[in-house]
Length: 97
Image (tube, rainbow, N blue to C red; front, side):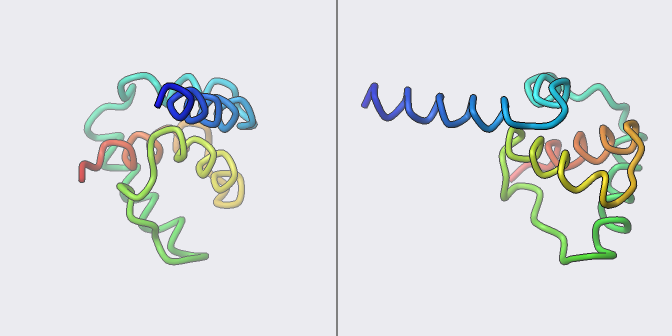
């Protein structure tokens, strides 16, 4: 059981360490820095900007760490500013199952 936990931790650390923006990995472990209004704006951006190219994924389908990688790869394609990137990230991780 201990080996399984260590393997899972190692995989999680690798996925964080491979993200292009090192501060985004740190943000995944913080509480949202956005206000309720900014998170609402993140929801609007998510629904509009992301939907232009593909169906929207269910926010609860991914962990906050997985969202770091997704956002780091998709935000540039959607031409999101760093601020918009943060708002969308904070929105998707704020959605509860």
